[in-house]
Image (tube, rainbow, N blue to C red):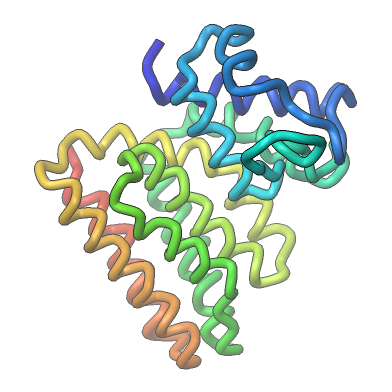
Length: 229
């Protein structure tokens, strides 16, 4: 099983249990080893999935032993996060060109709105600090990258923006990850993407709506153009 598909198996497992009501706030997931055996994936895939789920706000992980250790669910089935996880699977049927076109329209509007009110979400900057970790694999980085863009949509307070962005998350991850193999120097590409991310945040913080729109368009188009086969 490919590594990317393997960690998605873990996401699907958690989403299914959230929807069924088997999991709820305060419930603990099995250990990494138990989940790996149960789902037939490697422990590295379990760790990657748990990391993504934690960033999404689905669960909290803590090391050590005792009642607070391990991965604990922090959301309910009705919170919207379970539905978001389910939407990710359906969105993967879209073509790359359509996904990019939709992103350009949606994200230009998102950063323009945030820039007009100079409202850069703290959560986005915090996530960028996490993404500076050079030990992240390209798949890990790009999963967090998708979350960064979702945070911006959520920060507008527009539920439609947020829903569309989260529904597109799987399609976005699929095309950015599938294109990553075309990048010869991933370390340099990751650094460039981070500069672009922070440029968008800086423009928003400065109240430069036009600048934010221009930067997000350059960011999305730039990655697509540089990896287009």
